[in-house]
Image 1 (cartoon, one colour):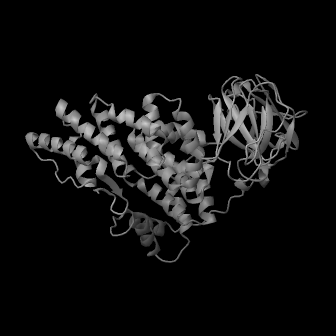
Image 2: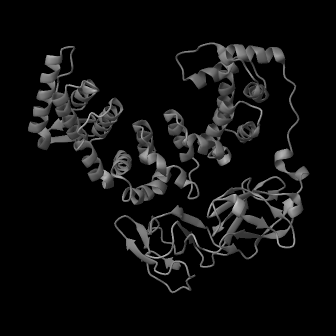
Image 3: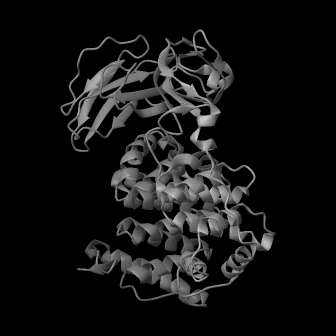
Length: 508
């Protein structure tokens, strides 16, 4: 169903397709969002937004959501003064192509990845056909219900595209002209520089020496600069692509970092080439993807970042979340949302910090987090609420309070550690709930005599309030300290305030 929204969220008449007929729209002026909801259709749903009513040739097409099982969606555009058109499609929608583009930028060349946005596609590429009427077909390499990626071949030149899926076939749309390989900018490689092997060996030696007193990357750059005036880039490329023994493999990553830190267009091109080189170590390619995203806001390494988002390694997931925050858009925002309910508090804290420190990241993810929190399990809702609290949004405080203050463990050391970390993280951000949770954990300690993370909890009081006692090696003294902390909190809870200058709670 198609609806139109402007700053007053009026409903304008439109001719609805048959799938979703009950679409309603309202304005939440307090939060600056358009609220869309409906009661029919078959999940999953997609919601597209355009500045023109014709979605066969949309203006500034944006997906509010590409794959949502909910029948309520929020879009934070109420206050920007524009008029928007919305189109909601369900899983039975007929294939429709909205737009066609190449991932390499303007112009499409043989070998480029073609991106087709629309609706009515399928997650299974084997059930999708992309073809050029009167011409040849191309095989999809990545598929979802709203996006298809396929590699272009030169023999498909100058033809419209049509898509066939289990729900039907689309009309031909767009015009694709694929130019031959010889003119492809990726193939126009500069001639390789002749390297002075003795100089390369000196660089490798210098960058292997430990340094102190400066940031590691700055120290490496200073050591490199001290070797004289020469074009550093070919040597850094040689180091990035060289297969070192295990004790020197750090030189690959060091070289990539020194390239990225230059911040020039040439450095960006070199990083792209390194990332696309299948012969270099995977860790080096991953590092190139990170530098491209963080330094240049370049999504070339997005496939690698996506894989790290699903890693079993906590640090890898947290780092990938940070990388993706620099290239986040409406098309890939769904990739980061599951990490707001991650089982590791380190990832949750990283998520909250990103929401608090990057306005664009916050604007894209917070409405989705509030939406998903309402339908998550109690534990996942608490995790999402914790992320929102770290970002300064109290929408999930009741879910977090229920989780922290109804905790009756310790069921495991890892659970107890997570609760303790949440307590401290909330306290250091000025939430009295953090100290409520700390007092509750001390009550559990007195009842169970499980030491666990007891000292960490007591130090939350002593580090962020005027409660002056800390732990000792005596179990008897520690139990008494716990009782005193609980009593202190009971006496002073209603009298304290958070001093944003000292970052501590003070008594009025």
